[in-house]
Image (cartoon, rainbow, N blue to C red):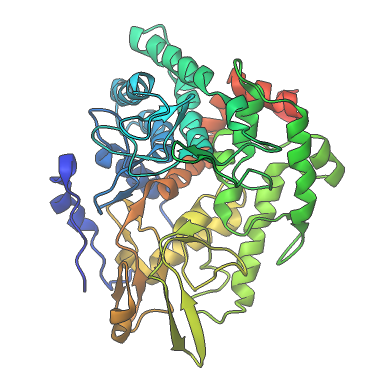
Length: 468
């Protein structure tokens, strides 16, 4: 089969070590799933592939890539988890965290199209992993800056000691959060823009529907320096009705890929708290994500596309890599496949499954998720589970090696599945963080005292539960 691509640059030495995670068709016997093993392997991905000099985290690995600022946010969340579990020392976690925060706090900012890391407190979606400058023509991203800030604010809550370095972490975290000009990113309105480019200004798309933007709005509402108006949250939630429904399960605010039901929940415990819109529906966002998880399982059981490998124990769709953009006749019908894409029930479903979709929902529905993780590993073994836990995605429908010429990414493990040959930071992040929240609420507990988060929730009208 095709060998994995080597990752160059400062982590070139990792290539040989990673080969211990190469895919094979070996399938172990079913048994109890070792959640701690997955948590640690996933943490190791951030710790071992990140650039220790500046704290940047690659978008993907082992393919040589730029850094994703969202992946950095997930990395900043993972380091304290590693310290709490004893996999690294607190001093090590503190050092890597300081490298990240110092980099962003001192990065060149400005409206110029080249040589800058960000502008108005926001950062470019992708940046060079060594120098940290804008990658090609990528956008100044409001949502990816949000995910970066999630990790920044968690670091500030975790590193709470009088040690000089921990004091600096808190100072830099506050400085980074205060610098974000949410009023500017409101752009032309009536919602916050998805981003901005120096070449042509604000992106036309805005955060106007329920998705991963919940945290974005909370930070924008709770900003101590550039808060947006509270009525924008009311306008935002007013559009939730457009997606309220019960396809494949109990009624909830629908968003097909599961990442939209997971990302904000990494840092905010929404269980038992609600704003006026949610109270009117008799639901909170934690329950909403639980129902979205149930809907995905129900969809897999129904399997309207008749994809191979779908059932009640193997399911999960989100944004992930895919085998490529092509059409091919299989099982008596013409099927369309995609490369990297957001996937969900009835939405670009091409038979590709992502372990992060289920694993990132473990805190919502552990009784459904744990059997999935066990079944995936038992059925597909080291074909999809290696040095850093699960590979990003796989597709059991594409198991015939004769189809290899169609594949644009990854490789076919004969008789098993197409398997991605990369691991993505934004998919690893929800795994390690939500396992930690499921095990002992590690991230949630700390973030309950984060002033920007609490301010945002209260401004949005949330009350009850731990906010009381």
